[in-house]
Image (tube, rainbow, N blue to C red; front, side, top):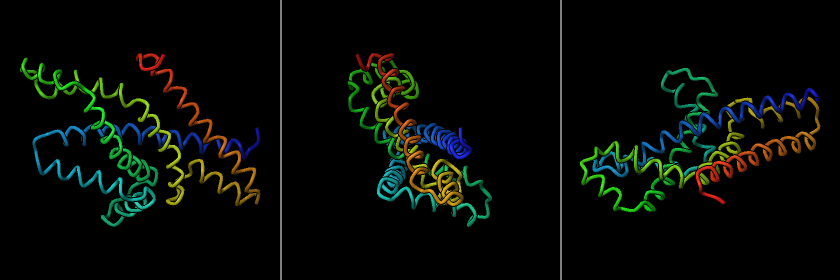
Length: 211
């Protein structure tokens, strides 16, 4: 295995790690945002609605730059990988919250009314009735979102995160051979996303979502 390919694979591992962390954090943000948007607290609903609309209406490129330069402007020193994960998670959270909102419309209202009739606390309605069904429904689009984060993480190269794309750029600056390097990089991205699609199919079969 060539030294350049090893370096690309190291960058790919950074890409996978950052994307996985961003997905977990984004899922947490998305669930919280979806729960708030279903609550009766008007001001919080409005804040979350503004957040979702701003994130979905602006490029990820700009969001990364804003998050990266926001902390130094506030006098806070944050590692560039941490800033990158936060930017991706904030972006992902907005889209995941909309996935959850859409999935909630597929759950029969009668299930919620029955739980309320039994005086089940609202948090248990979410934990025991709504979220398990929601996660089954959003599994395919959630994996697509993870794949989108893998590809979107290439933008973190603009703030100096040495992920897959940045690794390729550094190799090209040393070898002056852009075509083979970019082809290898594209193949690695494809393999990552293809593996994600296969994992999704296995999980759907395990949960009865695909035959």
